[in-house]
Length: 272
Image (cartoon, rainbow, N blue to C red; front, side, top):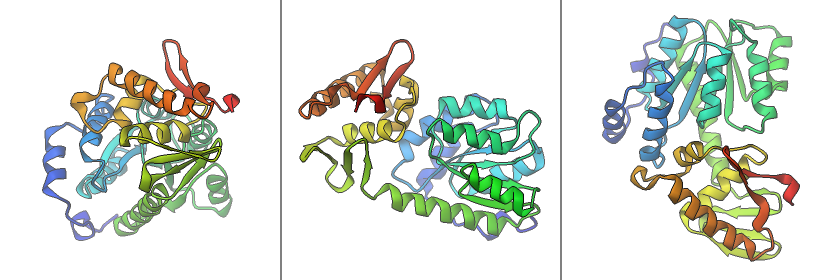
């Protein structure tokens, strides 16, 4: 980790720098909310929201410094419990996980996260370097595995490569539960019928489908889907959900989006 971050990381737009300066990204639970607020402003910029699950303060501090310098939004969790709180309340593009944590094995954290249907990228950053450990990491859903000690340049190249592949994938057609999302048209194809959606309706449907069978809170949906913070409200979500259900109703699937009383919304595969 001897390479200076400034020597390997590109500079980013003044817009991102100004936004980052407006909010505190400290290692507290409140920083999750700050990341969500910032995310609503900068989704059009190549900025990722990254969760670092690492109990070593020196390592986590260095990681956060490099990633923030690269323009990314960073939240730190020193334990499995803290990680679970952040993962329950916020959306992340990338998880960077240690394996040896004080309260739970990092492999277990990722396995539980994947079992819940979550699809964020995951990179293990750990001192466990055996082939057996690497196999376990990938079997539990890792996208990459880097062992300590490591060089800042290599880590950042791996992060950039993962995020770039994810961006390409996100612009491709996405199919689930018989729905094919067509990003260039902001439309959905289902049962031979094309349904034209607004940009907001499209993002909402994609968000729900990618997290099918998960119960998603209103706050989580608003922080991840809405791009205009001033218009982000439970009422706005309810209105958009109503319009989306009405459009999907033309194909007989108006019931795929369920209200879960007191908890939020869910797209259930049982409704197919």
